[in-house]
Length: 257
Image (tube, rainbow, N blue to C red; front, side, top):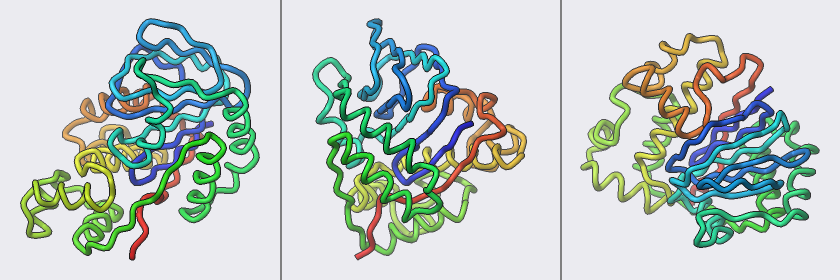
């Protein structure tokens, strides 16, 4: 079973199926064991533990050993990732104290099944971060152009799915729209668009759509482009996404003021 929560600047995955080969990606990654320990090879060194956070572009291999895990993938320049970066040293990774990882894991086991919408997810993730000792303050947002863009993405508008496409729709240059989006959300627009495409493709696959059709419908140039993004970001190919998985689109970034 795999539960995927697709939020504005991250993916949170609960699964017992991750055994990823050596790879690296541009996202910050936190991994928490929900039962025992797991093994992760980081830059050639093997670590066994119950919680670890990796900086972006750090080579790693995860052996979940069939254990249930929580995997949190965050845009490395988002404000959420900034809270986790305080746990990372010069080595490119940080290990969570066992007691904090255990408390967070117990909370996830007890309450993840209650998450049914964005409000519930916000409460769930806030408490999870607090138990890990990670501080995150949601940025406020008021610019109507950014709100318009987020609305278009949430509605699944995918034709042209690029910064240039959306800038044209909103009457702005690509650089101006990117600047506005980062200023009001703490997230780079290009990374936000890629995350939305990946989330949409996963959602479509889990609802029975063939991989090729799902990739193109989500705005990827080709199925191979989607497969490469999935492998790079999740450590899994689209074919690894199980039929009994559940996807929930949630929001945890923005407060309109």
